[in-house]
Structures are given as C-alpha cells and as structure tokens.
Image (cartoon, rainbow, N blue to C red; front, side):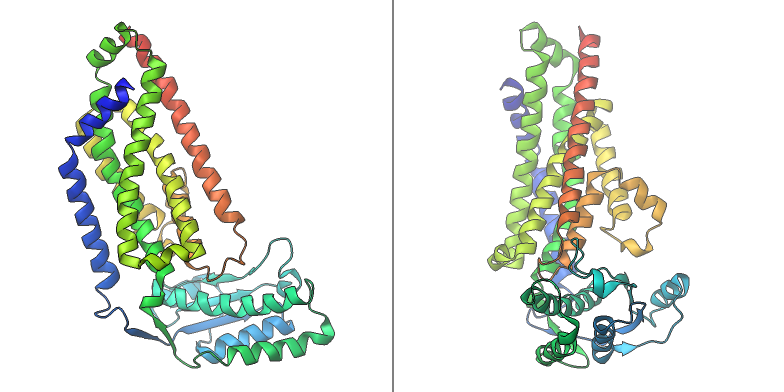
Length: 391
C-alpha cells in the first residue's frame, strides 16, 4: 500500500491539470455536439442521395430496395468502388447499399442479421438516418421471421411483405425528419469516442507523471532496501493507476449523463458503449504504464501525451471518418486498444435495436483485454530488468 498511497498524494498535485483538461474537453464537446442546433428540440431535414445495388434479386431484397428508394432520392451510378467513393467525396451521392447474393437465404442464420455492404458519407447524422431506415426495416422483417419459427414460408412471403408495408406506412415518407433530442445513442457514441482522446492526453499528464516520480532510482532503492519487494511495488502501482484512471472515467461519464440525460442509462446500446469504454480504460492504463517504464520522465509524459493522443485521434476515426483514413494507417493503429473501442462505439451507435449480432463487440472488448494483459506482462519484464540495474 506504500506505493499506492504515495501515488495518490502525487496525483493531488495535478488536480489543476485534471480540472483544466476536463473543462476544456466538456466545453469543446458541447460546442461540437449542441452548437449545431440552437434548440435541442429542433428537427433536422435530410433528403439523402442514395444508390442501391441488388445482387440477390429475391422478394426481400427487391422490397428493401423499393423501400429505400421511395424514401430517398435515387442516384444512377456504376457499381464501382472508386466511382462511388468519388461521388460521395464530391457530395452528389450520400450513401450506397450493396445487397449481396444469397442475402434473403442467409438472413437470420448463423448470426447474420444484416449482411449488407455500405458506402457511408462524411456526415454522421445522415449515416445515422440511413442506418436507422435499414435497421428498422430489417427488424420488422426479422420479427415476422421469428414468428414463423425462423424462416418465412415461400407461400407467405408476399403476404408478409404486404404486412411490412403497412407497418412502414406509419413512417414519414419523402424527406425524413429526425429529432436531435431522441438521438441519444449518437450523442453518447460521439462522447465516448472523444473521451478516448482526452483520457490518453490526461492519462499521460497525470498517471504518467506520477509513475515518472515513483520510478526514480533513489525512491526505488529506498523501498527495496527497506524490504518492500519489487512485486509489491508493481502491483501497488498498477492498483493506483487503475484507481486514478477509473476515477477520471467516472467523473467524465457523469458529465455525459448531464449532457445526454439520465434516460440514456436505460438504452441497451448505451450500456454496451459504457462497458466497452470502461474496458478501453483498463487496457489504456497498462499501455501508459508500459511506455512510462520505457521513457520514465515528466517531459516524456507530456510529449507522449500530446503526440499519442493526437495521432491516435486522427488514425482511429475520432477526429475524422474512417472512410477517408488511409487503410495502412488504420492497420497500424489497430495495435492500440483505442482503435477497437472506437470500432465498438461506431457499431453500437448505428444499432437501433440489439437484435443485431453483438459478437463483434465482444470480440473487440476481448482484444482490448488481451492487449492490456500483454502490455502489463511487458511492464513486469521491464521492471524486473530495472530492479537488477538498481540493485
């Protein structure tokens, strides 16, 4: 407990840094999230320009294509990846959907809920609108599929599609209206993605500096001479790092509830977003510990906090849509836990109902935990080497 208590005492000296970072982060997030809409109840008008390519040509795929084209503006374009991406970049196409061959047959089987290919725009609000339309349609169809015992008989397919039409008639046709006040999943997803950036910067400025002090040779030598083993120092330091990072996360998560509203806690996708973000905090803590073992100085903590937070934010999709990020750069940053948490936030943000398969979310969280275990194992190895140097 000696290292744990000393670490917490050191962190008290950084209280002004923590408060400043927190206020700046919340201020920027509020400006980005709420500044675009003067009134929280204001409605936003969208008339998406879309293209739909149907390779299945089944009753379900044809009906889905008709449903999407009736509610949006169709754009005629050749099905070519480069042409579609150029059209989206030039803003005369907003969204493209590819319905693969075998879509209806595989729907709902082996965990496949919506095996669709999409090309998204750079507008998160518009992407959310299109994802909502598709998710709503498929969730209605899925309800009928489940009611029939897992597969809709061919003889009842036309009747079922007519029933789906009746349900869809309750929607607003033509240009779609969505309320910003009902878009809690989008707000929470954006918040947690930006939170990753601030936690990296704040983590290095706080626990990074604390580790730099704790790891000074004369302090380590004093502890070891007094009989306080290196193993106790390592686990005490880990406990202190986790405690501080979890406290920072809890404070910032509380701010999120004030922004999104307490009712957000009842949204299942929001709960999973929080679990994923918490998993990321644990893995991130061990990464900071590892890097501070390699570069044990306060100046290094400041430099690494600035460099890694900005680079990660641009490389993982926090500050820029992943569609425009160079793929090799994304692959490089996939070796950091932040990449996998951002992936989860994007998945959960676009999931209207949790009837979608969550195995991808669980897999990403497992990857983050394994990364955390790997980083901490390397930390223990480095600490053992440093212990021999000190003694």
